[in-house]
Amino acid sequence: ILKNFKLTILVLNNFHKKYLYDLGVDMNKIHSFHNPIGELNYSHNPESDYVVYAGRVNSSKGIPELIKAWTDANIEELQLKIIGNGDLYDELKKDVNSSISFLGEMDNSKTKELIKSARAVITTTKMFEGQPRLLSEAASFGIPSIYPSFGGMDEYFPQEYPLKFRQFDYKDLVDKIKLLENKNLLLKEGKNIFDYTLNKFNEVNTIKIFKKIISDSK
Image (cartoon, rainbow, N blue to C red; front, side, top):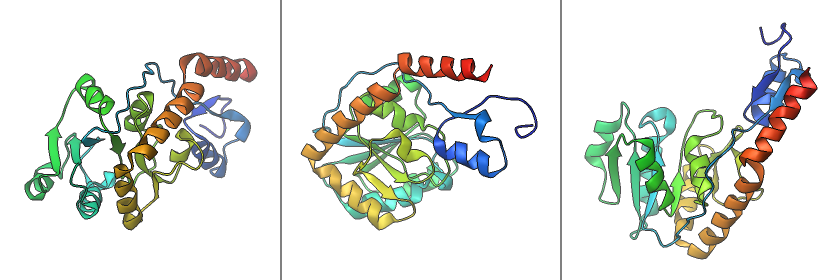
């Protein structure tokens, strides 16, 4: 259908665009279009004493690796708050130390409030993602993210962003977690990611891009 019908195809990043092109879809049909981020309100506090992961608690999201890396980093002043549920929830909850807390499922408004006051958010996903909700919501408050650099993930962050880690390199992940002790770095990067998000993903700009795509496709 994607190859043979006259369609306008919107994808969430240029990685997705190339992926479809490599499968034989006409490049002229495919347009990279980011989800707009409506609420943008800078609130980052690098003095916060916790970091948030929110999502499924399973192996495809790399939660066992996240817990090990967090434990290896051994930052005494910080707690990792894990929000969500999944098939590894009960098993992993049994064996973690006091620097990690499992909060279970929470509604979106409570999750956003925790993200809003976090020092950072973190994801160790092993899956190709679209426009990750956790990272987008964090960016809307100027909260830095630690994330794996692969697929289209880098498109949602400024160039030379220092808190990304090499996918599947968990020593590099430990090193990035240790950077959370550098509050000056976090303050700088929080402002950078907020400005980047404000300029690139605000509703006014994304609506203009959407209208142009539709107009050009007629």
